[in-house]
Length: 395
Image: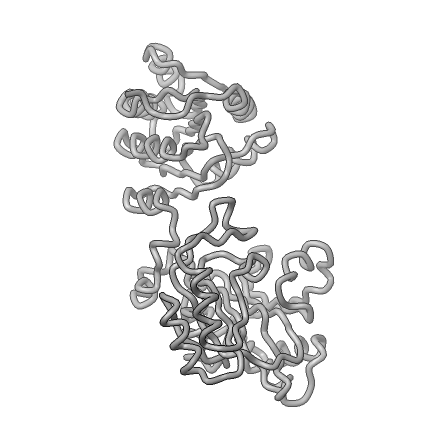
């Protein structure tokens, strides 16, 4: 679960991480009031959306007066902001964080993630923080410093010190950086985070370190023990189909391709998406219906896929392990008829009772393209989408 910048900063403050003063605004009038209350010579208005790249897209702007803050808020609120991470439709700006302007000496990046390769949490830091950190990571990975944490031993001060010295910090700033790293680790564990980044972390001309921005993502599987954090979810920032899928017990993530995918099992779903890519296509979604999929779930899955107007073909890839292929086939047939599917439908079945399942599909009277292997299924779906399937549901 993603949360907004201002929410993440509030959570970090509880662990002693220094953050700038600011206020939330939902209108130009509130932005003007926040700027007046801060009483600084300049304020920064930041669009609150669940996507990075806001600065380059004009979602972070400087104002020198409360009146100017109101004028900038007028241009940002109630409009979509298109960044490198939002897709072409952008994300609707409903609120702004109005923050005090600071006199910045240097910018850094510091983050904490789980390194699955070694099963340990890993600090990442760079002396080149700011808007270009993704490009730096891609083109100059040696500039990203890494330090792993052995949770059996806990946080060791040398981790923060070594990173601070390599970043060019010394004296009080180095000590503050070490304390900040320890605070980030505590917050990461306490809040069951999956990602925690401060970009930029700034060194002020006064010598103080400050978290100028923060990105925090929480582990969905741990939210049952984080009831207070659940209240931070902003459903406006979620894809409507993803909310519908969540309510139906389906794992669905909307993407930007034209081939709808319905698969049972997260690993198989990712392999299916990779196969589509290798065949020259782009998946429209990640959709895992689970091992116990029934007709109801399959029908709901079809409807979710068809709500995406970019979809030009549908690929169903099912491995019948716990579920028998003939039962899955019956669900596919019933669901396709229920929703009036008229897009090209490619179905690959493997596993228990696979021959019975294939026979049911063949006798259904539906225009189904069968496939025996994942590569052939992906190629058939890509070809069908390229031919321009007519989108939608039969009247």
